[in-house]
Image (cartoon, rainbow over the protein chains, first blue to last red):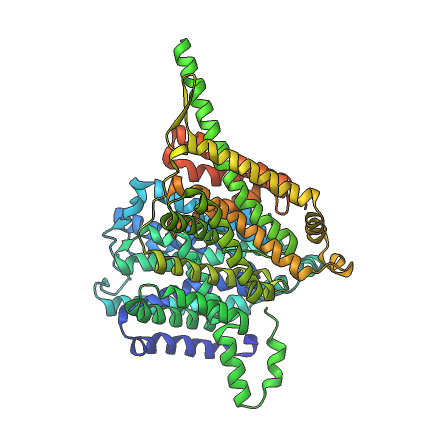
Length: 328
Length: 293
């Protein structure tokens, strides 16, 4: 479905999202958070929506990214780009290792293993107080300056400039990931999701592809975690706990799997709703749970799929939507 | 030298008993998860919150009646009844669904139940004290051991034996085992699978409620205790192999003993140790100790 969309449309769409978002939501900080979590949800979507791997350990990559970015930014004065590149690299390596171990088992065991590795990471972070700050988290995380040749150094001290930075990174990541899922590699991933045995029989090294998609997922999720720590100036332990994994997964399902736009919508709707309801009622997660049950029982395609179907109905060509109905 | 030797002996005995008690509780958790999965191919991510609910209902009945025994019985029974209701209106619609759908719906259920617990009992964890007769320690020679922990070992052994007899020696157990091998064949042979499934789900959840009620006097009752227990239950079945009674027992005891012995020399590191042991076992035996491939 998305392969038929020209790449320049994706360029325009992602730039419009990044440019319009601050005007659509109550605060710049919330807009920044949406783009950051949008990237983490894209990481989750690559695994679940495109490859059919339900990872319950995404917080491990998110939290690890937050710690790596914070530690390198605190201890080494190497500027923004090296910090983010190190974060991406660390996330990719960590995710490749976790993926390598977890895909030894399939189905439900795979899910349990990703959860267990996530928990292992959480307890290690909790224990390694001297490095991660343990329960208190890492305080005073700086936002390193961007040093580009021929240009003055850029700092991102205020919310608006940090949003600008996040928006540029978001657009670049979004387009790269869109390229990835539209590439031949992306087609192999979809083949694995639809029928793993057949993909194997055709001659694809399914295991290598799965490890590769874990690495991509870990890279973008860690990058999101690193940016989140810079946004908060703080890397809390909760970044790496099971609840963060759940929330990322929840946003992915809410928006709809198998579309990167769905991921951004999922992150946006979730964060705006939680911003709104958590002010009103401390037990608002109860509504979230009800909502999750209702969405999964009655609209398992998520919000994006609902939008697509609704739009096509409006244009009177809803018959074609059955072709796309292959993720479920 | 002799004194030191006997001190070490009693320390090891103490930790072995602790590990046995914890391990049997984890076994109950893992067993509940595994019979539900084995029978209905259903993944229950709300299993941990039923454990927490068991602890709170136990607390509540003790608060009402002043009797520990009433609480200990009421916890699993009320949680089991709740499971029957949920099975009737929600869970049974999901047996044919994808695992991903089951997981996400039960996460939603977990959030609903956890937040309801927080609404009813507040955010401060509740303390539950064991009854008079079980408080204090039992002295055998120089060896002292908390009575309540011995009681846990006794109750879990009785409960496990009961479940084992139920599964292995009764008609109900026979159909459950047959159903976990081949549910379609069982329904073709004229067994009412919809009742069988409901009973199995309730039984599995009741075991989680019992585990929570038994743990309440040791760890208290907290709405967030379910997440840790769920993680442990997963480790138990991953180690032992899903769908296996013996596997759940072995997995539970391994986790319990590892936890108790690690706490002797590295108390903060017990959870890291548990998950590392699991990773190691998975590397050596990808299907778990007793799992079918």
